[in-house]
Length: 268
Image 1 (cartoon, rainbow, N blue to C red):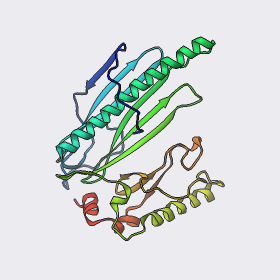
Image 2: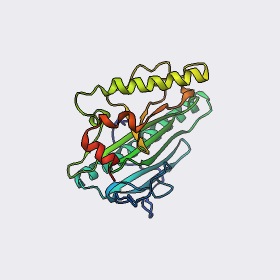
Image 3: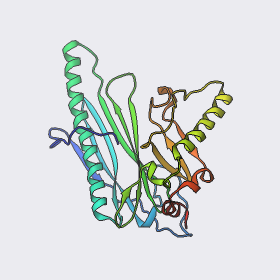
Image 4: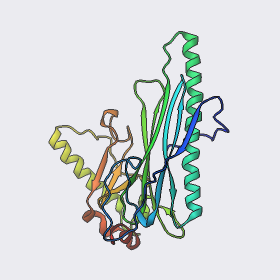
């Protein structure tokens, strides 16, 4: 999730509804009998995750003349590292509350300016949602943030989380997946470049002409064993191209993984 400046002390003067949905999203214990997870929003249906981790949606709704905010963030439970779990939940809630507070403030300020100059006011908007991903025994989810501030279109940002659910939990970055000594970035860049070349030849033009290579902190997730590399809006392409993603087949990267990561992802 995009970083926000600070946590507002309160949301006074606005009707704010905060609820924890009664039906949690259960994370099924890892076993051969566990069903495979589909990639649908976690707030719509139960989705298996590792080691009985549970994702329960918390919703926050704000509706004023100047601002509409709709937030659904996960409240995570069942992790082995309770301190990590508490800190993660607090961070997700704080960033959502901060986004709502700052959105309301900016919406009121722009509405006042519009009134002053005789412009048509355009309400600001914030929409935050999340999705749980299937990553074996790892805990994996993403948070999508959409912000509209009155321009031609809004902006969307997605933050991807992959967590090693151990007694001492750790959020994994892309570099943490691979064994030392492997130039994983060059290998992944080559695979992505091959996919871009194939698309260019098929479509007759290259929509991703700004691609120069992945960052060490590039967003990633897993889907049915494949490693998915994610790019943000405008990162490697025009706005119309959306948020490009490239799926790396398991057989192309599995041998580069650290043994413990490979086991967490693929061992039944």
